[in-house]
Image (tube, rainbow, N blue to C red; front, side, top):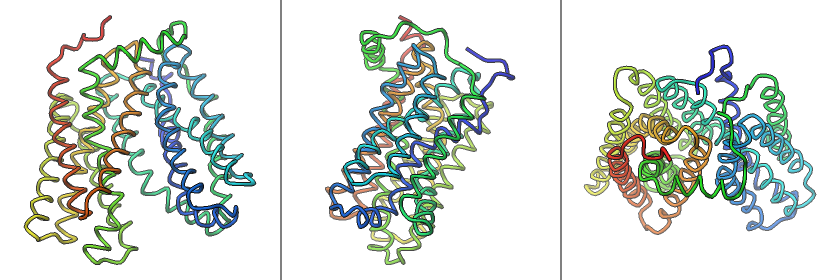
Length: 397
């Protein structure tokens, strides 16, 4: 379904809606120590405010996708933004850590609506070439958010206290709710009656599709696997390469610029090359980057410059691959776009969490992280090629 240009939702609003979910996860991290002191909480319960949010952010997408296929994108998105604003408000007023954890779950269940439905709305309202370009931008914003949000959250918390972070997030939720109400049209095709049987059937169809699962698993391995390196970056640059801790943010910013370049290249080249070629080619760049850094580490020549150079190549490749893989995944069946977007988002979060957890098993942070990146990139190449062998009409049932 393609809307007339006059009815297309504004891309800038979809960007804000999409990043609001991950923004709330990362903005609160710098304020954790202050919140713990103020609430008199133990470290474990305070960490739950982050882990519960991640769980809600991933699992909630599984519900919004199929529900929006039946009930429409607009009502589900408005409901999600309302929950997001409410969760932020209750978090700001939380008298204890238990209330804060519960409020964070509500906030996550609202914030994940933007992640799942922003991509679905783009797919509904644009043609194939514009879809890739716009999804590239949405994906870029989602990747930039983890780098910028802690900076903003730290500054707000330092100036006004930790509760101000949640007042700001609640205001963002309320503002986007009003803007979405006024500016976002309904983009979904006419929906089917909603039932648990329909929901289960939709996901069963997608999970049985080698085509969809190939793009979804490959997309997650190609992109959110980089969280394994981000999570270990302080230990790599400060612990192994003996750089000041305050430089780590700058180095991660350079790697995010690689993602930016990759997204820009895909947006520029999508009219000249097939989406499949850009997806596979970008992933090959990531494989070369991870393999190059692994070789450097094994030979004992790792330094700041060559680590950044190889990782820049990896993130550039990931930036090229991600929008193409996402476009292919949500285009497998036009009647299950919302469900496909939700399941794709959940897969990304799950793979990112798995890759980050696996790093802890190694004694050498850089070596462990790069082995995981290389393995993930190779898995992505294999699953992409398996998916591309299937005919486009696989889910026509």
